[in-house]
Structures are given as C-alpha cells and as structure tokens.
Amino acid sequence: MKKHNFSAGPCILPQEVLQQAANAVINFDDLNLSLIEISHRSKNFVSVIEKARALALEHLGLTNKGYSALFLHGGASTEFLMTPYNLMNVNNGKAAYINTGTWAKKAIQEAQLFGETRIIASSEEKNYSYIPKNYHIPNDIDYLHYTSNNTIAGTQMKSFPKHDGITVCDMSSDIFSRQLDFSQFDLIYAGAQKNMGPSGTTLVIVKNDILGKTGRKIPSMLDYQLHIAKDSMFNTPSVFPIYVSMLTLQWLKDLGGIPAIEKINNAKAKLLYNEIDRNPLFKGTTAVEDRSVMNATFTLTNEKLTTAFDSAWEKAGISGLKGHRSVGGYRASMYNAMPLESVEVLVDVMQQFEKVS
Ligand SMILES: *Cc1c(COP(=O)(O)O)cnc(C)c1O
Image (cartoon, rainbow, N blue to C red; front, side, top):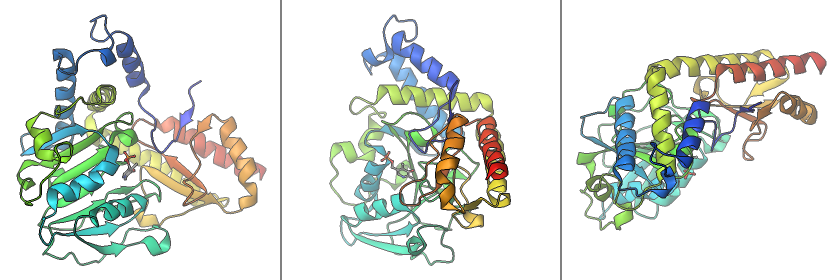
C-alpha cells in the first residue's frame, strides 16, 4: 500500500503522474526511446517544455500579459541571487525584504552581496511563528521581496502588501495552491519539488519589462533576459523534472485548475487544524491567523508521548511527519497532490491516540 506522504519536499505527486512519468522513462511518445535519452531540441521535447510554460502562465491567469515562464536550474536558492543580479541597480542598489522564515533569510543574505538590503519587517525573534504586519515599505527601493508561504515555520501570507514598485515573491511552497491576483507580482519563483514536480527545475515567472534596467553585467546563466530570448533552452534543461511538472500542471487543469484545488486544500487544512485545536494532546506552533494551508506545524503538549505517537502514525502508514529541526514537533505538508483521505487518516490517528494516552 502506498504511504500517506506528508513530506515537505521533495514531496507527494499525483499517483497517475508518477505512472505516466515512469512509462515515459521507458518509451516516450511511442518513439521507442526514453524521454531522458532524446535531444532536448527534438520536437517531442520542445513541445513538452512549451506546454509546461504555457500551462504555468494559464493557471496563473498571466497568458498574454507580458510575462514569461522559464524552467531554470539551481533551485529556488539560485533565484535568491538571480533576483538582485537582474533587479538591483549596480549603483546605489537598494531592496527591501520581509524576513518571515529560514528561506527568506537566505534570500536576504544573497541580496546583501549586491547592495543595500533593508529588512523592513521580521518575525525572527519569535522563531518565525507569525507574519509581521503594519510595516512601512520605502519607495526608493529597486524591488520588494517576500515569501508567500514559509515551508519550515508553517506560516502563510494571507494578504500582500501594496507596493507600486517591482514586487518579487518566493512562492516555492504554495504556487498553484490558491487563487490570487498573480499580476500583482513582477517576479515569482518556485522550486518545483514542493507543489509541482520533482527537484531539479525551478519555475520562474517574470514580467518582461522589468528587466535590463540595472546597468549590471550579468553572467549568461543568471540572466533572465537571455533565458527568455532562448525560450528557456539556453543550455540543456532538466528534461525529466520539466516533463513531470508539465504532467502535474495538466493534472491540475483536468481537475478544474486552482479554484478546484483551493477548495480541497482548504478542506484538508481545516480538518487538521480543527483537530490540533480540539485535541488536548496537541498544539499548533504558529499564530492562528497566519497558519499555512500547505504546511501545518504542531507539537505534543507532553513530549514524553513522542515515541508512542511516532509509532502510532508510522503504523497507520504515514510518512514524512517529523518537523524541521529548527521548529521540532511535527509538520504535516498537504500539497496539492495530497488526497483528503490521507489527512483523515492522520486525524483519526490523533483521535485514537487521545483515547489511549
Ligand atoms: C524549499 C524552499 C526553497 C529552497 O528551494 P531549493 O529548490 O532547494 O533551492 C526556497 N524557498 C522556499 C519557500 C522553499 O520552501
């Protein structure tokens, strides 16, 4: 029996996508060749990447709105430095960052190599357990950067600050999970392995007209404009992760797109958070209003029960529930591909555990 996979990333993918991907590794498009042994310039693969790029923009409502979709290498971590490379002025560069988690902080550290990096709000002093509100965004900055969903702490921005200038969002762990006006962002990036595909490719959605304005010389591989000009094929792309991402985006479309998955995601999160709040053996680790729909973090109220609880969920076929070492406790990641049924199994384990403890 397949396990109930609550892994934070790389994480669960739709079972039918895994099956299609497995088939393509042996015989892709009835070519009697594997997907991973043909040229990335072959018409079969070009149509895969073109479809993946088009589906990404379509889901976000950004088709024909001056945006490009790219599938790049190096994970979201490389976007931490590509952002300032492409957007921070070479003279007196300034950017503003909101420090809401481990990943936000890593993005800040990279930007500091390029120019003045102002942390305009932070929740670090409370171990990132809430989303800061009521901060001031300066208007003399080249761009504003924030993280929509904090994968490790388990918090999520429910609304976004108003900013007329360039706005950058690390959406690695909640892209395609909820309806938003995506045109409020000028640059969105997301490592595939949280909500879209396997690790090894990063989706970048960039508004074309924000680029080429910094006066900075940019190495080819880090230059968004060059990747756009080369249709995301400047060098050999990650063919397998892009193929699986395309299948997942098609799966999402067949399901009814973001509006349909958002309903399911909300139902899963509600079910689990209700149990965390009801059951005296558990407590949530984040501010209630900032709770992530994707990653629910919680602890046992009595740590002495850890071994017993761990064996209870393992016996129920649950995998990947351990919290990140910086938070402790548990983290249930409920990405798009996780069925409601898996969350029901977890909630049932928590209820049974209350009865026997
Ligand atoms: C996982 C994650 C990253 C880092 O992604 P890599 O692809 O491993 O570089 C960055 N930001 C967020 C929000 C993440 O969840």
